[in-house]
Length: 277
Image (tube, rainbow, N blue to C red; front, side, top):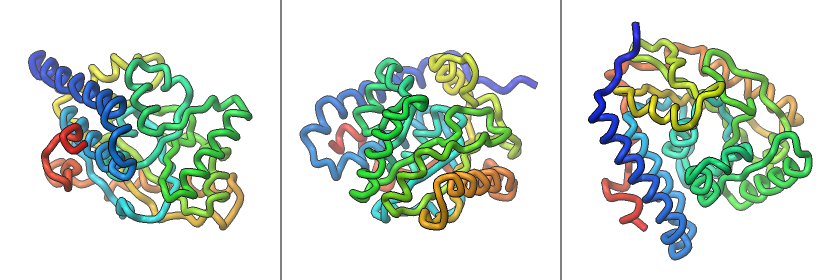
């Protein structure tokens, strides 16, 4: 049976609101952030992500224990299904992401990602790998959090690909824990919703239109226990994290009924990120 779709007017309304949020992000990065304290950037970015999820009707359930915003530095690693993953993770806990260089060329979105601290590199370039590893270690050493998708690509969510181990060295050098996260998109009955995956030759615009046309998208973040980065080399750490993510995705008990799931709430009130800046 085909999935339910929203009406044309609803899609247009959501699309207009989404464009408005992208323009707001442009203003924040270009005009507001250079004029306000860097310590305030994270809260503003987190609130912006939550508001975009609300526009897209993404219903998020969080399992495990996400670390509070003022916790110690952590490297987060997760499986990768969609561009929505970044919004979900940032809405839950502010992180700086590592992304492939192709993302930097996405119109406006790539520029916003760069302006909010995303680190880009080409996986086949040893020089760029070394540079981004140095940057990650510096961020972690200064008390920040970084996040990466070690599969190196998106999947439809049915299985987890082998985790590349190269960037795990940053956690070892900075002596910080690694936190595996399982990301899944599910139907209201708890079964896998592969239609949301951003894979293959699908364009970003097509994927965004797909999300806008869905009445509600159910997302689940499953936080596994932290892994001490001192217990092994990068290959062992990558394997342990991959197993942790696979276990979290295979546990159906962690997904509540749709009526029990709720979106992430903004603890700072309803004012817009632009107003907060």
